[in-house]
Image 1 (cartoon, one colour):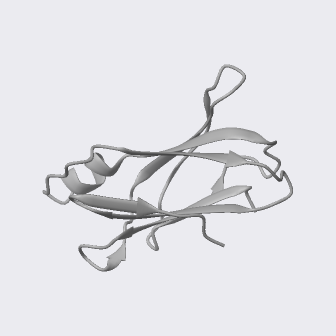
Image 2 (tube, rainbow, N blue to C red):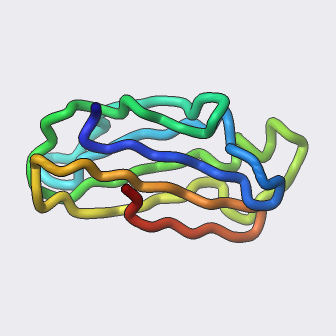
Length: 110
C-alpha cells in the first residue's frame, strides 16, 4: 500500500466524490509532483506514489473545481491544497477530504 492514500466525500450529496484529480507533491528538495491519480467510484485513491516516502513535508492537491464543474455546479474552492508532515516513514498516512461547493474539511484518518 502507498504511504499516502486519500478518500474524497461529497457531503452535499452524501456520497463519494468520484473522478477528482489528485496529485501528491514533495515540499523539500526542489519539490515536484510525486504522483497523480483520480478518485475511483468510491472516492478513493489507494495507490498514490511510492510506499517508501521519507520524513518531510508533502502536499496533496485536489482539483475540486473540475469535479463540481463536471456536474454543472459552481464551487467557491477551485482546488483544495492540504500540506502535511510525515514523521514516521514506516507509517501509513490516510488524508480524507470532505467537500461541498462552499465548504471543506480534512483530518488524518486511519
